[in-house]
Image (cartoon, rainbow, N blue to C red; front, side, top):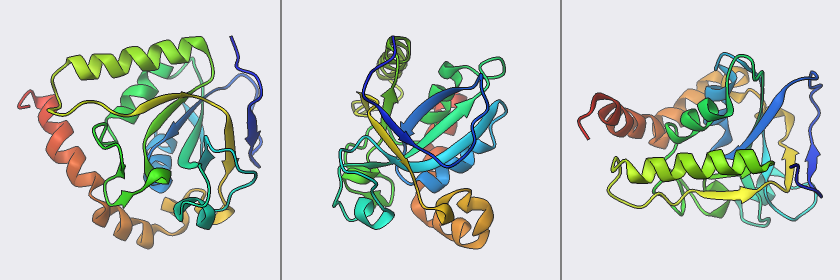
Length: 195
């Protein structure tokens, strides 16, 4: 069942037959890069999701003048990658125990969430969250929200594929953000069975 009254504003031409998933991920630069480099993903678009204000800007969002979160809209080929696999990628690139932001970026616009568009997405997202909670891999509760999708506005052009367009600046930010260290210290330990 598709939800009604959603608004999507994107400039890219999207091929027919693709499915989409929307995630609030903290800094969208980092997660756009992760998703864009994933086989089966055709487009990963940085933007502002979940808020009520019309046509938010980057400054509006990071300063808290809107209720949007930095988000990534992922268009994918379901014959090559599944929604469940995208959920796994999402969980492994965030801190699901942080209710106040992600890594160096703190505040409401940087909080992580899964935005679902269908009952099936909602069910898969809730199951994946519960599975992660029940696994005991984290000492704290999994607080990432699962929310109905409402709006997505594509971010300014200079944010799209920032990891390519501004590679040096992106690397500086990525190395200072704490995301990479978290993934290495926490998720690699989890995957190796040490945690």
